[in-house]
Amino acid sequence: MTDRKLYLGPLTDNRRWDRVNIRPDDVIVATPPKSGTTWMQTIVALLLSGDPEVEPDVSFKTPWVDIRLRDMAEVAERLEAMTARRCLKSHTPLDGLPLDSAAQYICVFRHPLDVHFSFRKHALNIPMPFFGLWYPEDDPDGVAFRRFLDGGAEGFDTDLAPLAHILRHYQAALARAKKDNVTVFHYADMLRDLPGTFAKVAGLLKVEHPPHVMDQLIAVAGFAHMKANAARYAPGGGKGFMKSDSDFFRSGRCGTWEGNLSDKELEAYEAIISDALSTDERAWLEFGDVRKP
Image 1 (cartoon, rainbow, N blue to C red):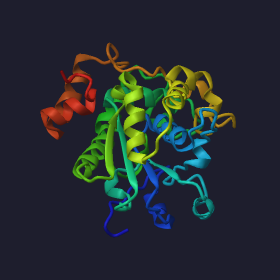
Image 2 (cartoon, helix red, strand yellow):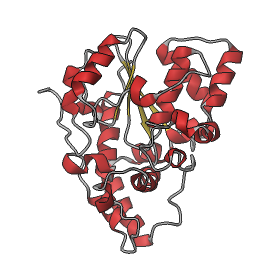
Image 3 (tube, helix red, strand yellow):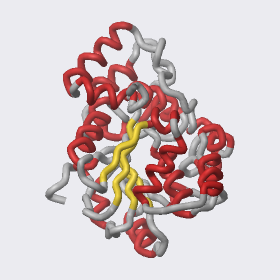
């Protein structure tokens, strides 16, 4: 992987991609954590199957290749044995992934502050003690937000959703977004126009379904339905991995950070993101196309 950046964290090892034989019709969903990954995986699964009752089983059928928790030999063997069109998941930026000229790469982004507050709750919902160092349940001194701002894009911090890692994801996607097989989506736009999102993804996948089928697929991909059926849709749902499958789906809203940060914290965030991105780049990362006239 000499032509790719190295991302190694407590969970991530992007060298594992060296064991994957990418197929021309593969779909790779590459996102920062808590940005709509599972939602997009579910949309892809629904569109590829055309069946609103399909079992997404995202952990098994659309595996997170980077994660160290599964034996890579077993993952590679399972992927190789799949005969249907495959969807694969990654939390590695595109500059750390093998980029096939024919496979489709779908990147989803969300306001970084919404990612942060969603990840804070997520960290308390999974049995991985190292998350508690960054995301303490009792945090009167604002440790979690300081580490969100100070964390690096690589190394140990990779898996803890710091701002630097989100920005790396975004900048790597922008650098490749002019390619025909790299497409960016925004969580806020998916909320605003889920039918439009389905139509766009269907176009990328080159699949078609009758209108009444599309309506059924869209209905089951709504946030309320996925949260109410969390054991079916959450990664590892129904297996007791998370304390609460339902809590994996936090609120499905944007702007959950508003009123939860001090002026000083917001000023520190503003300084970092304004320095890293142009005005237009920042506006899209935070709000998507929602604010366009």
